[in-house]
Amino acid sequence: MKKIFAFILCLGFGLVLAQETTTQPAKDHSRDKYISEQSKQAEYPGGISAFMREVTQKINSNRIKGSKGKARSNAKFSVNAKGDIETIVVTGENESLNHEVERVMKSMTTKWTPGEYKGNSVMIWFNLPFVVNFD
Image 1 (cartoon, one colour):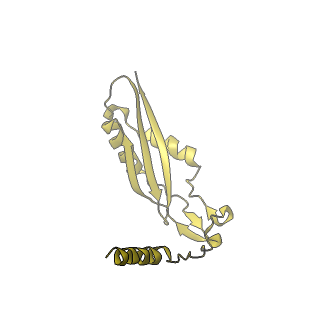
Image 2 (image 1 turned 120 degrees about the horizontal axis):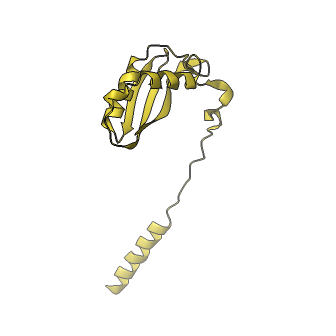
Image 3 (image 1 turned 135 degrees about the vertical axis):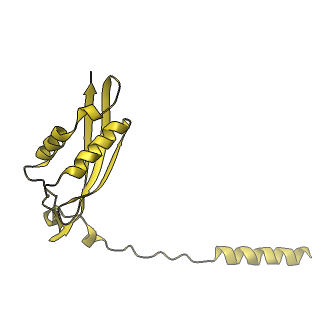
C-alpha cells in the first residue's frame, strides 16, 4: 500500500511540475504613443486667463455663505467637440461656493475652439481651482 501511495505521489508531482508555461510576445504599442504634434488643446477666445477672469467677474459673492478665512472649490469640466462646456463637476467644502461656481460656468455662452487629436475634434477636460477669501 505504501508503494502504491508513493507511486501516485511521485506521478502527481511529476505531472504538476512538468507543465510548460508559455509567454505571449509583448504587443507593439508604438503606434499608441501620445504625439504632441498631433494634438491641440481646446482654447477659449482670449485664453484660459480670460475665461477665469469672466467667471470670477460673474460670481455673486452675496450668494456665498461661509465663515472667515478661505473657501476653496475645484471645477472639473469638459469642452466637447462642438466647443461647448458640457460636463461640470464642482467639488469643495463650501457648498454655496460650489453651487455658485457651477451656476456661473453653466451660464457661460461663449464657444471654445474645440481640441483636436489627429485632425479630429475631441472632448477635452479642464480642472480649475477657485479660492474665495472671507474677511
